[in-house]
Image (cartoon, rainbow, N blue to C red; front, side, top):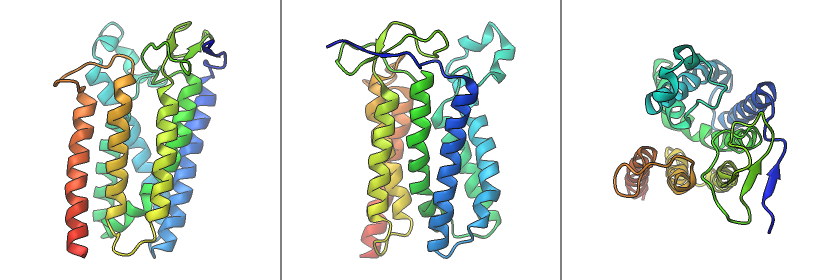
Length: 251
């Protein structure tokens, strides 16, 4: 089978920004809907959404720089060029989540109820966000000879040209779609307060741990696992412990 050629792999920063902005707005809109159904104030989404966005971009860039210092040392000013494929989702998620929880505590909000309301919207936004990454070529996978491997040919692509690679962005997008579906199916079940957010944490940790094996530059830190995978495995076991504990308490 001939490899899949992605001529559009070099969409402009403006087009990529449109994908990310649309994903973010779609996630916020869904969260507002969920908040209203849970008796929370949907207007707060617009307020904390701004702070979480800034924190997410900052955290994603900082972690990328810390993990890849060699890419920055030759040209220090490039630290600000986050559009050149220099964002790490894990860093954005950590700092963004921290800012969100601090905000909610400061407003004396029900943190667990809000995290439940946010979970499906985050999964929904990730579907479109990873799709934008696929077309831009960012977050590309490792070389492969599998029939569904893709080859970027556009000179503006962030992925290497004329190298058949795993389309891990599509793996992430499809995985996020599956997670979104599961969350929607479970969100109205009784005694799920706090558990829906934990379910998202568990499922996304599994997705990231698995897909990271096919990421370009995967480096084993402990046994088979990279730094990111170790973090996500920590999330998985923590989430499972809390999920089962809350389920037992509710029972």
